[in-house]
Length: 151
Figure 1 (tube, helix red, strand yellow):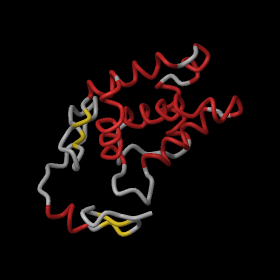
Figure 2: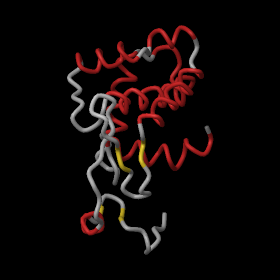
Figure 3: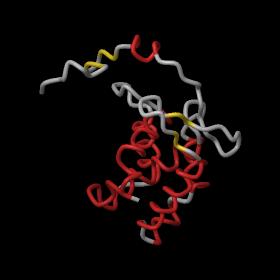
Figure 4: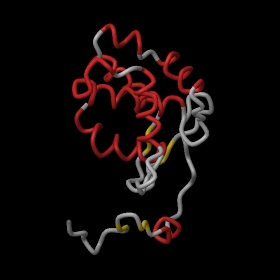
């Protein structure tokens, strides 16, 4: 695989100078704080409205039995029981990530996958150590680059 010289990172060797040289506010949106998350690479934001609309869209893709199992309060409660903290991403960002993964992958994994698996998968996706973007920034970039144009 060839990497373009104009890219601002190389695999496993993200150039922090690039990010440090750009001036941004540190913005994260949380329905409880009214803050918003900034996608540093596109300048777009993942607003509470984006997250709410995305959750409604994903819930519409679920079968009734899955809607009951994957309710937000169940997922967040289970995540907290499993030791997941919400200091790097909001509960809403975590929840929409879990739903996104479920709607994309449930058919591939079959019926043996439980809520615990989806909770672990969402945390792994948001906290991916080899990604240049993590947490809410990764979700915002994904939403604006992949999801937004197709809703």
